[in-house]
Image (cartoon, rainbow, N blue to C red; front, side, top):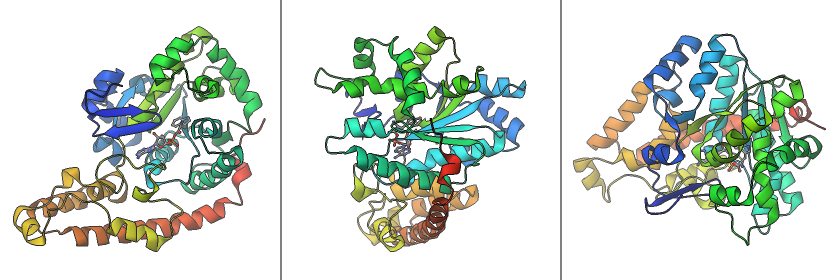
Length: 375
Ligand code: TYM
């Protein structure tokens, strides 16, 4: 992506204020239309707030997946995590929606942990560290409530025998100039990173290869991961005679500071699932908001929920009741709701969520092997 738009979105870096409409045009994806929402409603009986609020806003071939599903054809879900640190609440967005889709459509899920990617990409990361984060992040994934019989999690490093044979079939069709164009790799990029996209694309075909039949997959993720599908997996699929993967793309949960997405590489502006609940509450209390400089000004002129990360946390994750969300929006705009109270209310919600999640995370330690794919 060039920077003339004032923002940049790659799998490793998101900067500036993202204009999602422009991104749809640049990446060549499709907007999620009312027709698609109606189709969801027809199939599941409802429209999930993350769809209705256009937080999942864009797709590739979602219409194909839903049309075929209505005709009785199966599909599977695929998503992943690059274990570079502890899980933050931004990661939970795609996982929460994936868990919802698994439950509604009763489908298998393949969950890739790209410990190889994080080892290769982060200069000081050791293999031991990233494998340690794989384990820690897997506890969060399990805590989200995925069905153990239908969820298959794997680490690229540990499940390498199976993955490598698929990745080489992909890599054979991708030139160095393609990876440079798609990912911005330079001559100074290590060759592990140049090969890595074949691994992330390989999971799109893993279900078909494991089950020896063509099973298309649908990938819920934020839109930063799109280059893997656009530039690699969808290009290679017809060459290896397997279905192109479909995608459903989310916007980014912002960090606690002014601008930018929540990211493991900015730990000071992220709420981690492993944070002490009081620490998390304090982080929220100290967050940037869309409020005015003084209480008097805010009471008079109102706040700016449209640029407020606190409002986004409600909208993305912590307030799925539309009328309550609308109330927060209107009371903020009118100056009735002040930032201190709004943050205190959210802090309390986050605390309750984290306590429950951390309890589930502990319990997950007993069932990890039920979820893991092994060579
Ligand atoms: P990773 O670990 O960077 O991100 C994991 C998932 O979280 C999403 N995400 C966010 N979503 C909303 N707001 C944010 N602030 C935010 N930050 C991250 C990412 O889009 C992703 O869905 N290479 C991948 C791992 C991977 C993968 C996949 C991800 C392998 N196969 C298939 C998605 C789908 C990575 O490092 O993700």
